[in-house]
Length: 447
Image (cartoon, rainbow, N blue to C red):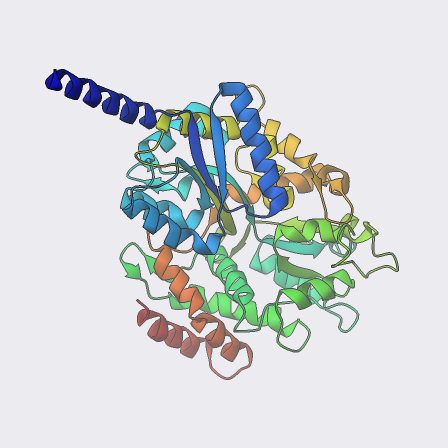
């Protein structure tokens, strides 16, 4: 009798454990923690439950806390089922066995790898699989006065040479500055802009083995180019704030900025109004603006785009089946809703599907952007510019991602060593050769 009771109890326990492994509620970590964005994700979870019967617990976590939370949860065997996360976690989490690489790659194959931006796929490669599912991203942009370029018969600023030619033609301070370059060495903005310029000319301080000495010829081309940008800028310590202010006043021909400027250009945000006219709500400056996401240097004519990308990952040892359903739902039926969380900074990395290759780009362009006023990007910018905005994801790149050295690349950027040395060169304190040598000496010591 006791044996029979014991067997029955064991069977119940095993049944409960088995049921728990295939529960119809999954947990979802997300970096979109702002209340309005959480509400949109909860609405998506409700739609998923209506469609499938499975529920989703949306757990918002600030990005700065992700690493510590994931490490603790993984050690305790308490990871969620799905995580929405930045590019920087893809390869480290794949190597640590946190994310289910095979399942994530299968999801992409099922959705159609050709429907995704190649750059977003390339940066998530691990053991010949795509380790995480690209969701959205944005690329840094050269923002320029298309009306001034057209009037002067200038080519779009897609290369060092074209940008230099535009500066020669348009730089006429104080009426118009040719550029507003980042020169404040202790600002991450300068690091970000410089990485974009280095990538554009095919130069990286890391390779598969770690630090890689900067090649003198290509790096000198970068230094000379950036000096020209700085010399055609207003005086002072410049970062994102001055770039936007000078351009918004109609006194800059070009700047480098993120796409979060797009709604501000159109007068939709009272905290950052265009001042080119007396009407801070005017879309006039937007109508005169063009953008370039990919530009190249003489040593890398095909160019590159600096990108910030986000991914979905199904987690190992979680509820794989339901988690996979949720990711596929979020990237298909609910993909427009996914992008609507913050459309000005969530470019669609999935262009469309088999029935319509541009389905999601078209839907995204009609999503309202802005803060104090709302309007879809398709009403503010021409179709060619909409296409250029998302085209940067085709050539999206970052130092150290493909080489598995993103951590080292981040340390190099955070050291501000490149910023300081470039500034010394800009200020004519050292030669280009000395600058390259100095960068290689200081960067090689970073571990």
